[in-house]
Length: 194
Image 1 (cartoon, helix red, strand yellow):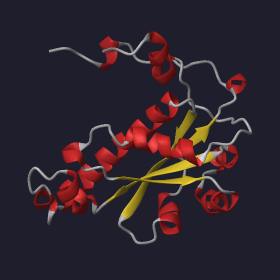
Image 2 (tube, helix red, strand yellow):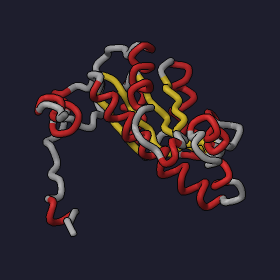
Image 3 (tube, one colour):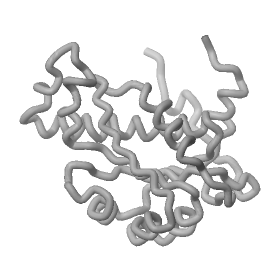
């Protein structure tokens, strides 16, 4: 079954990266719905290494803002929610429950390069799924780098096993403040069929 054109427009073709936000809150219920939708998307061996902190309160934003690059500070302050998309470097400890078909945990024990690659790659995928889930549920997203990972990790993940990857501002974007849509590469410049 294929999604209709309107659904594809919402998720991809008409979706935009937002930097200016309407003063409209995002409910905790909607945040849970985003996670409950994105969690079903695939990861290697169902590893699910993403760990997400949804920064909503003014107090939590004050903890985050010192790590934000100056050019990203105001849009982060104004966004109803900022999701810190991170990954758990000990994700494999959950594999006996998440991937019980085989002893997948043993694939990672003592193999730091495989742990790092799997955690980062699949955590990044899950961050992209979060953006798509938010769009599908009626929110706008503003993913970004432009922050100090070490400061974010110290403040929000002091145990050291979870590492921040990127941020996603979430809310209801002000569509009147969007720049003109930038082009994308055509198929011939970015892909091939062999």
